[in-house]
Length: 224
Image (cartoon, rainbow, N blue to C red):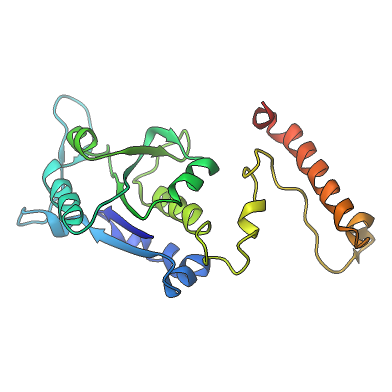
């Protein structure tokens, strides 16, 4: 998979993509992540990429010209399955969305900043508008890093045990059950006996029941 991210503050994305699973996935060739500085695509001599919005009110907007040039330059080199815009008024990002996006080959992610991007880019280029929750960030960079992380960990070869992602919360509309590791007893706090039984069938039944109960208590909406 190839992921191209367009942003006016690329330094915000240095750290998330250079550690842990995301770094290993890139080193192994599972995914190629490219961060593009929007300022490289402006014709403004001061490298400005924003301007005041038409009409009254405060806040700056990323302008149409550099965004058009950046997206068009990328699309001239390859076909893209999706052009994703990170925005608070988009579709709520969920595990099912990550599963769907993980099947794509090439993705562009646009990071808005300030008050967002010129609507004409949304009208003519964007195929998916995605929100990570009902709140507002300074820009879409941190949201984009979350989306990329959720997608990449699903790609074959990204994780040492590919079945691990299949048992995560939300994959089967249930929250994940409690997990324990050694020692079996610490300060009198004991691991449930069933997990020490060696009976895989009983353990799986216990995990499913625990997942169901946890979901019922914390996220009953998922059971509906």
